[in-house]
Image (cartoon, rainbow, N blue to C red; front, top):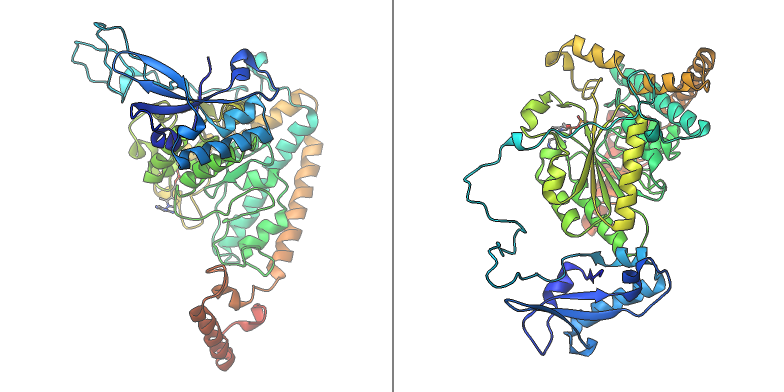
Amino acid sequence: MHALSCWRSLGTCARTQATSALRRLSIIRPACQAGGDDRPCPVYVSCCVAEPVQHNCYKTKMASLRPTTYRRILKLLRNFNRNPTPSSFHRSLSLSHNVCQEFPEVGEDKPLFPGASSTYTEQLRFLGRDVYEPIPVYRVMNKMGKIIEPSQDPGLDQAVVEKMYKNMTTLNAMDKIMYESQRQGRISFYMTAYGEEGTHVGSAAALDDRDIIYGQYREGGVLLWRGFPMEKMMNQCYGNKDDTGKGRQMPVHYGSKEHGFMAISSPLATQMPHAAGAAFALKRAGLDICTVCYFGDGAASEGDAHAALNFAATLDAPCIFFCRNNGYAISTPTSEQYRGDGIACRGPAYGITSIRVDGNDVFAVYNATKAARQIAVTESKPVLIEAMTYRIGHHSTSDDSSAYRSVDEVKYWDREGHPIGRLYNYMLSKNWWDVDRDKAWLAEVKKEIMQNFQAAEKLKKPSPRYMLTDVFDKSSKRLTRQAEEVKRHVEQYKEHYPIDKFEDL
Ligand SMILES: Cc1ncc(C[n+]2csc(CCOP(=O)(O)OP(=O)(O)O)c2C)c(N)n1
């Protein structure tokens, strides 16, 4: 019998006037129990009463509930009635198989502590990292782009695979040009995604375009996949007048409401609890979409990562946590970042379904993300994916990685099993691509990037007045005064400011 319990808050505040022994409140829907019946049906609200040695579920009248609880239940039911499918029911209520604590027969020797469901042992044994086998790395293709196990071939058609390849090579070509542009002092900062193209494109391709993305900063390929124009990326990096962020953030801090991509911000891992919270909101709204949160192996050490994973698990939030484990956090290798089995092994400890994949295998990333999305959306649960990859580029243009890792190591990864080379080989084996097409495509994409780049460089910077707008939704008196002061000051001392490069104040 499926018992679908209400939110945790509802459960803890639920209390009938009749008994204080009420532990939780559950809503039971008969059609769900009967198995997948889509028709609307009555929903019974019942409360579970737990006594020391027995457990019973009693139907209760809504009127006997506290007014706040009663109002919450009505709201839940209204949401459910608007879209009464089993899936929307699962999404508007948390699925719980453990509605009431089960008490064993008298005399049975079993731990009853509410904190864990376990057995007793008389052996004094600590657990070390050797109790678990390291989590295997799921892959579909080998390093030569050959499908290893045919049943795992996602069977994507030529157009989709070609889009994947074009996306990955576009990102790579754009990175080269933007990186060089920074070296020449034309933009202030840049971060490449060399070697990680498969993680961006494989995951983005498996999502619904309505799913909401929370990125770290090295996920430009996800935006490209969603059709975010290259021109806008350049505008952001140049902080020019057409940048939707009004030139306020550092380069590569992209964001696009239209493409469901939350604006990037520099403080690591802060996007993680946001993604968990947003997923919870999506569930409450009864929407069949999820959030996807990208982060690095370094960011996973932040306190916010813990908060996010635990909140998502306990709130049954449909959020895919996608870790790009590229071996480094600037100069910190993973051996100094953690001593456990990477990031994936942390998932089950939070009660989160988890998997480790070969991040350089775009099909493995695709399959894992597609399956994760299915779990997140239909079961309303978080999923953790750890994509193993290698950061081939420097951390950013402010970093020289030869100071802390060998050039040979980097060369190895650039040569062996590179995500773009692997997909290229796969396409060759299918006769979907050839050397001449490749040359023509790479020349075409380079030309397009250069055109966008030059156009973005020519545009003026946004008006300096935007420095003081959007601090709050409406400008305060103090900000308005400061804006006037700035204007007066710049007009008086204009020869000291590069005003010709900016739009009017
Ligand atoms: C809270 C916080 N601490 C430190 C930094 C400085 N910082 C920027 S990027 C970075 C490394 C992040 O590494 P990782 O999460 O593995 O991502 P990667 O750069 O490898 O993609 C650090 C420490 C920051 N931005 N925010």
